[in-house]
Amino acid sequence: EDLSDGAKEEYSINADLLNTIHAMANTIRGMRGPRGRSCNGMWVTLAKELKELDQRRFPHSLPTNPVRLREKVNRYLKEGPASLIHRGYGNKVAEKLTEESRRWLLARWSNPVERATSVEHLFELYNMEAPIRGWEPLKSVSTIRNYLFSPEVKHIWWGVRYGHIKAKQKFSLQHSTTMPTMRDSLWYSDGTKLNFSYLNENGKIAHCGVYEVMDAYSEVLLGYSFYDKSEDNVAQYQAYKMAIQFAGHKPYQITYDNQGGHKKLESGEFLRKMTHLAIRTQPYNGRSKTIENAFGRFQTQIMKRRWFYSGQNITAHTLESRIFEEHIDANYRELPSKLEAQKKYVEDRMAWNNAPHPKTGVPRIEMYRSSQNPKAPAVHQWDMVNLFWITRPNPIALTGYGLSFTEKKVKYDYLVYVDGKPDFEWHRNNIDRKFYVKYDPEDLSLIYLYVKNASGELRFEREAMPKITIARGKQEQTSEDRMWIEIYDKANKTATIQDRDKAIEFQEEFEMSPERFGQVPAGIPGLTKGQRPSGMGRLQKVISNYTPADDDEEINIYDVM
Image (tube, rainbow, N blue to C red):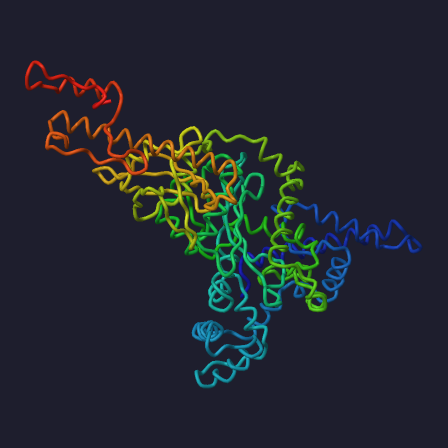
């Protein structure tokens, strides 16, 4: 009477099938006679027939292994239908749990502070509590075990005893998804321990981390960056940059975890600029991060070949995933340096990219390069600038030495060039003007200069390149150094004279030149000794401004030439 309707149906079908199997076995034995062949083949045939039976019409729970099936039939013939009923139901008939005692069992089994170490321990605790609460003591541990591990009960306590992540993986209904069918549709990114042991500068065994960006369609590892302690926005930025450069396209979607570095990238709108969709994985939901599965295969199939492979992460349980500690300890002096270990990792990721994809058999890199995604736009120079270049927060004034700033304690000097030569006119027109500088922190061979308009927006002005330096001492000067000295000297002298001439023209236009006040103009040190500008232009200017005192006065052209 304590059996559920479902259990009654299951046990009834089991009994009918066992009766049928017993009858078929007797028939086969009779056909073979007393000296027939062994009956082992008969049980293989009967088990196969049982296995192929339509479970929707005959929902049984009989074993389909030939040996187990034969034992089941023999026990049924010996004990009768009672042998089909699970032991838990027998305990339940003999020993009833009250509604209150069930709640107490759940509470005590779920207690994270004063833990029941096992079901047997809980059985002892229950029988100690029973007289106090007026419950009937239990005679069998199975009563508690059957109750706690029944499908309708165990999901209640699983999370508080084994952890909510474990409970989520076991009991939460999961999506069934299909992977992308083209490249750059979805990129995964994640940071993990680099599973290579190496010797650090102090001769100690050490490890670092690596941040990877992977294309979900092809499983190609697109970009990486190493880090020492924990993944940060710098490592993520560098890995994404390498991935973009490798792909030549922006991804339609990127999926990443909830690490702090990503929050900085989000606040700077970096992720929004890089992709159409930037989606964080659910916290503590490893199944939503396909990159972890692929990276696990990368570790066990490729990286594991290295003798200094340090094993998979602590969540891996198989012996094959563990480090061979004794061998590494015995040979730790032969471990690679950090740089050597990272170089080996780069070789291994290349091997992974060139290895066949498990589903197509085509090399991953070939799958990636032969695919096209119409919604993954190509990346151009201005995209790289907007995505990966940094804008210095404070503007920098242009001086006679060019434009200079210090990055990581290193001073950099830049000039604006035209056709391979400094743009002397532009520099002369912009001395003391302040510019905002945008640059790639990994490549300082080119910077962009911006000015801020009235609305506060940055407007591109010019691009600048590192300033060419020359040896100061003549002994070490090369022919190229002397060429640059001559170029600078000629350009500076020409510009200086032009500026002086323009100033005098303006003075004389409004009768403000020194001569009007009975004085002579100052000379240009190193260029003139107080003489006036020469040429027909100067003579024509004097003539046009000349007013003779009387008709006999003449102009001496040698005084003005």
